[in-house]
Amino acid sequence: MSDHYRFTARDWHGKKIQAEISAATRSEALEMLQRRNLVLLDLKKLNPVQVALKKRFWQALYKLGYRSYSSRDLMIFCRQLATMLQAGIGILHCLRILAAQKELASLQKQIEKAALDLERGASLASALQQSEQAFPPIMISMVEAGEASGQLEAIMEKTADHFEKQHDFAEKIRSATLYPVFIVLVSLVVIGIMVLFVLPQFAGIFHSMGMELPLHTRLLLAFAAIISRYRLLIPIILILIITGGLYLSKTEKGRRKIDRLRLHLPFFGKIYTQTSAARFARTMSALLGSGIGLHRALELTDQVIGNTILAGSLAKIGQALNQGESLAGAMQKEKYFPDLLTEMVRVGEETGAIEHTLNSTALYYEKEVAYVVERLSTILEPVLLLIVGFFIGLLVFSILTPMYQVYEMI
Image (tube, rainbow, N blue to C red):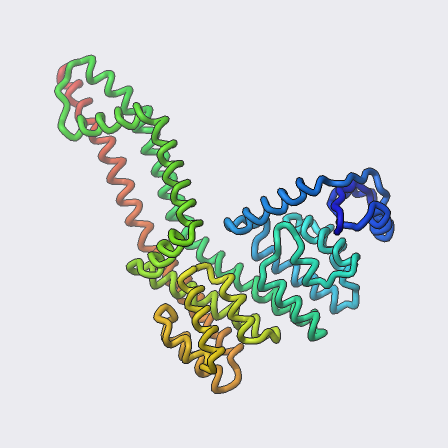
């Protein structure tokens, strides 16, 4: 049973390092630090209960979807690791170099922990898996395949390509949706300021003059009064609704309902299905191209597909494969996989080039989704501007109408 220690040390460049290390005894921990040529400043044994609670905390955050790193960080890590391995640098030395890279600051702790586990004799895949904020299962499995085949450099290049394409696809979607979201947020802020601060001032003026206000102005002022009176309660209600929604999404029954709704939404359901098809094809292509077997590739894709309904379909496909069915034949029985994807898989199986056909299919769906989202964003921009202009115009009109009455009275 290994104990956990937190150490503070300096390397030969004077850089201060604070991290945790696992060792059977204090002497073993000291030896491991000495082998790294570190000048030890402090070494404390951690409470086992504290370590266990911390590990469970990070595991819970990981399950909730929290990541301290992005696909871009993983792409840079894999690309640089592949380059250094091709240059003949040892894996341990590679990890130490990568841990010092500023552009990989979000992965620094995980890389340092992996380097320490590697020193103790663990494989690279095992070392990466032991991190509190675990690396993605697909990456660990590809590293494991690379170590087993002796082609770690080539596999890391493939892994880097996978995360790069994943990052580029996400950036395209984010760029297309950024401006409409910005318009909505700014509009809500402007309308909120007018309702909470501007309208109450005019309401006091109008009531003090005993004016009979138009119906639309009275309705607007009544709405502003309700919002102003319950402005502390409204955020609490919103927080409760969001918290309840998040809790529901983490329960098995609630998650299945939400995931099913995503697949059946008008118009957006098709976009979501195509996005999932692209993720499936991209992941399967990367795994099969790394030498991972079809059954194992399906299991890993099950973990990264991001939808419990689709994950259940993948589990059924896995069972069908065990009974001797082809992948395309099993996929055809599941209604959530697009016909094009199934046919491309069939062609890949018949020609023996399933990795390449899946890669081509992923490219097609990624381009299609990016095009549809961009076109939707282009349509939404003027529509949102019109809606926002209407509400702001209504606010201004509701204020100006009584103001004209005031001028007439003067």
